[in-house]
Length: 460
Image (tube, rainbow, N blue to C red; front, side, top):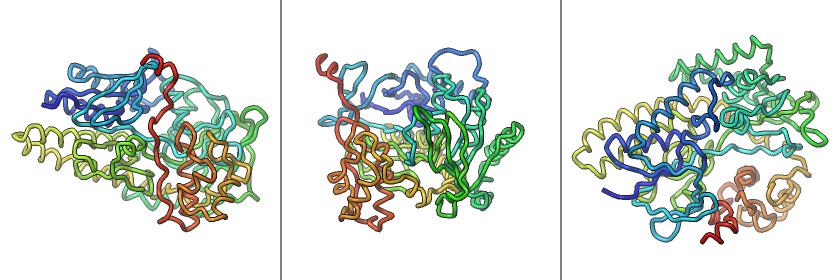
């Protein structure tokens, strides 16, 4: 039995892996940067609270189930919270940072369940205080019990917009409108795929009914144009989008608001997978993702990837993929259980295919279009860390930059502390849109993934 089975990420995928291993008596170490397990979606508020009226009953139930799962298997799980993985060391080790102290974690088997991050879409005014990504607003509501504004506008695409609008309403925030870039006709084409999960589809309809009851308008085929304010957000401009998601500024409308939620999708958080030198590929919907087989095994035999870090598809898929990855290790460690594991794996694969058929409907209907690349003007900052404007990227491409490395050297995009989490996907899309899809290459991730404070060096 290997002594060091390490899971990076305590969200739905990570805890699914740990609990499945625990059911077979296998101990594991779970590392997460947050103070609580559950991931962004299920960890709940930081401090104790009797009620969460701003969250729907289904989500509250799932948060409770996740907490119960952690408690049930605590005897087989060493949970390292408030701990960041900075990257790999020589051999099979990870460098960890916890409260400004560095340490090394050995592993025999490693599971990456690092989740996802939101896809940033730059536009004039996107740096203003009060302009937030949709997931960030949810994080404040669910984890911090913070009400982030008084008057909100929600823009972007996908089912998260409707859910977020309902949560804001329940929090006492006036929602001026929801503006979804996808047309209603695009969503209606996916009715058959949505029937793979009829209960979820019905819950979505009930959320729409809740917004209608509270007279919150929902516009399809509309999106963000720009945001303005002297010190913080004061007003938002929206306009109808054409089929390529280009804004018709002749029909632009201004709305007074102090909170703008922007949600144009998510990408896999695969930076650690890249540093581990795993084979990766570019996915149309999830960005850069590790290559995995049917058992969630990566290009390195002792490393598995599951959940949104392997491909963005939501919590339910993450839980199933976590079980598949854990069972693959069980079969390897206990050959006598291989037959039972194979039968269960077959059932899980059927469930996974059904979930992906459902998820595919949203991916196809809400697939971002090239028109979003035209939202930023020449003075819009694309790379926040290095303050690189769109004009600098335009100039570099016009002067012959055809790949990410050249663009990085010419403009300093992705060279800041965040290592391109905010700007890299805009740059990938720009290069592809210019016809350099094959030449564009990849922005390389640097070690360490997060800056190491001097205090950590002193402790060493």
